[in-house]
Image 1 (cartoon, rainbow, N blue to C red):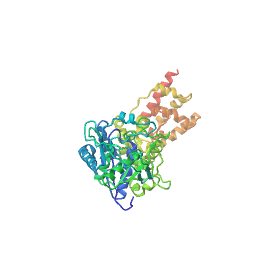
Image 2 (image 1 turned 90 degrees about the horizontal axis):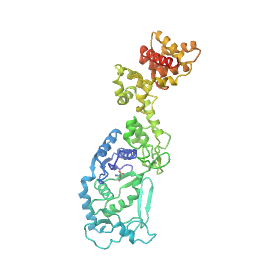
Image 3 (image 1 turned 120 degrees about the vertical axis):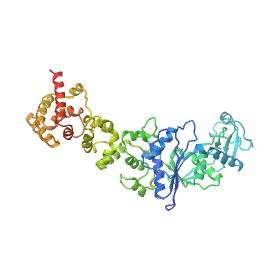
Image 4 (image 1 turned 90 degrees about the vertical axis):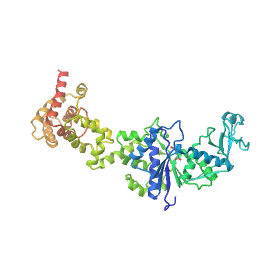
Length: 466
Ligand code: GLU
């Protein structure tokens, strides 16, 4: 890439499913190149495959880009609105001798083949001079030479002579093939750099040949490394969590997602981990994008999310957390106040925001399975609960500090330690063996509610072990 040239890039998703984390990385890298070269990013919707496209997936593309806080400068261009144009360019290629009509069926091609001949079309109709007609597709006449794709990430990739068949550019229905539409758009919209997923590398020599046949300058290509799972298998929507929307719903935030995606293939050159989008614009460079498969590690993403949540100012944390707990908050008259008080206690304890309802739900609504809780009690716990309830009832200032002091003294008098005393109290008050800091949670719940909950568990335990 010329460091000073404004690059015109494009992001060209096909609306055939949920927006994939791989697509998120592709738009991110394109966006970064556009921003750092003061160039521009075109959004193109590659919707020529009418059988697989759905309008809701198109909306999903816009939503995901917006959620990631990225944007585009031009478009969206819909390929489906340009079909006639692609057809007319295909006819130009026919006129200039770069394409020909072919009526071979796949079976006929196979039947002609001697064993051991390479797969693909054998060029049977090249010089038959067929006219357009039913059942005839338009094929591109591939020159008898090797094709070299110069790739920003992989260097020169050579496709040997004979390795590319005369490929179809218009079906017999006159539907344009994807590779043709793709190249025509890249030419018409003056794309200078094509950054896309590695899976498109095998069709890139075809793109180069079409560019040449149309006398158009060839953009720079860069094929981004494939994303793989822990087993080093390509991420797949059947096996792996790949939809950006799923991560959003789980309570991942766009900033750490962007940060993590940036590092999936790009190596900053040192061990720096955390980047804002603005910092990425400064630091990112395609020179440091590798070609080996990049492991999409959910645990590492979780680490980024957790660190990001922990770094937020309190008010921002409360804002991003709110949608995940909004329903809970309305379940208690003091819901707002309780949420405001618990938020600082849990901010650094969660990896994703969707952990919140389970963690702090006891502050808003409480209907535990007492039989199950009793089952978790140990031998001395009933006496601990009874004693703790009595001393807590006498406490004047029901603050976290006072509660702790009181329970320490209570543990001493019971001949145990605070940790052991705390365990059944936590079960009684929160309904779970782990959770946010106990004394703060108790202070938020208030004296009456804490004592009532402790008594309720103690009572059930007493009744079940008479
Ligand atoms: N539409 C293709 C896809 O969604 C991308 C093609 C390209 O970037 O050239 O995978």
